Length: 207
Image (cartoon, rainbow, N blue to C red; front, top):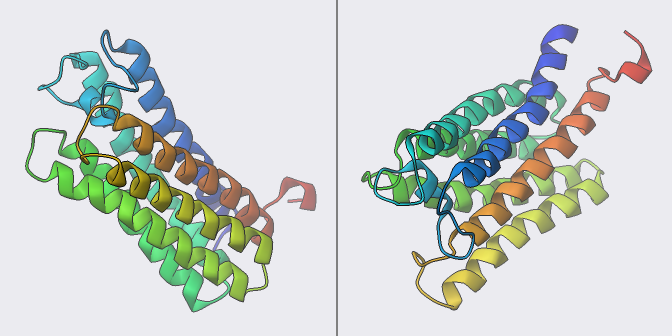
């Protein structure tokens, strides 16, 4: 790995969630009728919802696609900083999570693949967080590992509560969706800073 590639890669772990979450929140602000308690986030990217406009569709779907592709580049640094095979498996799972994120943007609500790829994103997210977190613990990074495992658990628990209290596809779906998105974003930013230090790319450590 070159130092430049390392810097670009761990930086992608910060840029990707900023792009993705930024697009989501900007789209909600641009929507004339979006409601957190009345809509799903995917309503912003489809032609079959009154919450969407051509602008929200461009911002929302484009943001998911761009954020997913940028996030995939973060995998370069994650692989380089991996300390055991469990972490490597976690990195591979995060790659699948990001592919699912891109596909959510490519196949907006109302297209046949949308629901399966959206479900895959949130299910794989918990599995990836649990796996990578266990790898952290095995590597001796217990605090970060436990925090990562708990993040995966919180995502799973949020969906368990949602499903236990009503139909999966009901008004307000945006609420459990944004929980997972924020957890993923927080993990990505925190882990990118940790990876930067592990790869020796921390500016404080010199060139």
